[in-house]
Image (tube, rainbow, N blue to C red; front, side, top):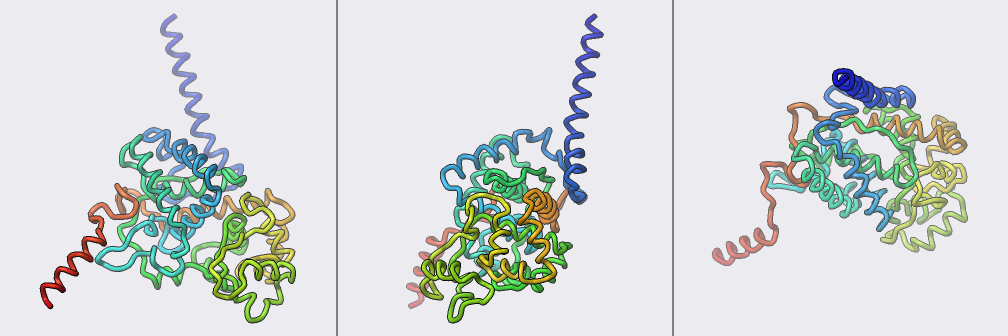
Length: 357
């Protein structure tokens, strides 16, 4: 009798395990998700850090309840990390004696400072629970996914197993790999095609602008000295009220219809000539992408499905896995780096100059 009971328990456990692992493959097939690169896995931390995703999700639920704007900040941080030299957490690094970091490159100066703090806070919580086995780049990928989900967007699985990079990109590399808000569709398509994205991917990833804000200086060339003819006049006049001068430092919402909800209203904005950036509005103006914009505006599920597909592709750009890179103990520095105390450095320089003169 006891033997039968043990066998039944084992059988149930075996069946449960099959169902547990098969859910990822079923989900992947159902959503038509792209394949994952060697070294990453849908189940990477299931046995070694089973609470990982729960820790990140629960913490971000509280963060976004206090300030929903942080969701867009975390999503943008992931974009800026992945597009430059791959999803290796290099954008999180502070500068060193070897030179300035990606953080100080012009396109990254408007990344939210709080985003870096949130990623570090998540790392502390995860490492406290599981030990130093989860990379900052994996945490950033999960945080970006939860930023989407917790603002109303689609849920999706994130392949994990990334390791953190040992070097940050130069300013030139950052400028050459991130697309400016003043770029047209040709620039967008050309730049992203080198990373394996097609026109549908480009339009879908641009939909991340359905949440978040922008500084006036990112788009006022469309208002001053002359108004961009592709911009709706009422929309332009409202923007001038928020940005009375070309160099105004104010901020406005990227999506005027539902700025804090991840939905397809961004594409509705474009169809009404209410896209904020040139890189946004030109997607509807350009014949190569106009029909894609229209399809996303008409059917949110079509947008969500394509966004998930593009995000999983983006999250695997040039990832480090296996014995590459490292698992950082602090997200803002490599494991062999010491934190530079700027105040101490300045004091030492003052003492040196005093002794010399």
